Amino acid sequence: MARQLDEQIAGRFPVGRRLRVLDVGMGRGAQALRLARLGHQVTGVERDATMIAAARRALAGEPEGIRARVRLVEGDGHDTGVHFLPGGFDVVLCHGVLMYVEEPDPLVAGLARMLAPGGLLSLLVRNGDALAMRPGLSGDWAGALAAFDTTAHLAHSRTDSNGGTPVRLGPDVRADRLSALTATLAGIAAPLHAWYGVRVFTDTAADDAGTPDDLETLLAVEERAGRTDPYRGVAALLHLCGVRG
Image 1 (cartoon, helix red, strand yellow):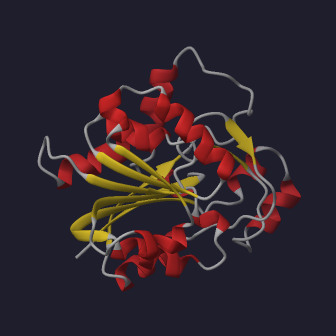
Image 2: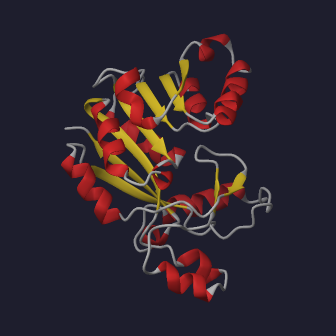
């Protein structure tokens, strides 16, 4: 996903430009720190006290120049209008958050308002069009059958939204369909510019599988599949990139 994001940034902004980035639901801050290391000014928002404490510890271990480029805010993604002025960011990230939000449209609209004209909105969501894939490939036929008719209450495991150790999640999560989010983005003047699949082949990997010896080849395969039909359509997650008009 980081490679996909970098591709979109490189295609939209001049090389060397220092961007204003808002990372909503930043988790432990892996993406925020990665972008700060690239020279961007990053504001991370996280409501979970454990996550934001981990992000602060990670930030404390960075050189002073990188620490100066990161601001951490303890808060909810729905409150961006309270903390920030509209149009104040070039890039807004919201990765692995919408699956916990019952009504995502107001949140997405609020995120789009934070973008300057031409700004990039990056969403990582659970793929509601491919929910039967994981249980089906695991031999859970009853679970696969049930997954065809719902986008809600799906027990699954994921890697922390910004990278790291796979975490087993509870059942109270939901998924989004590409068609619905495409309509949402069009309706908030940040129409879909590009989309990718994430975790096409690796979603069924065991949580404790460890790092494979051929990691670079694995990443190359996932990256290729994530931009290629029909593979990207059955990915566990979708990475959608909208552009503010």
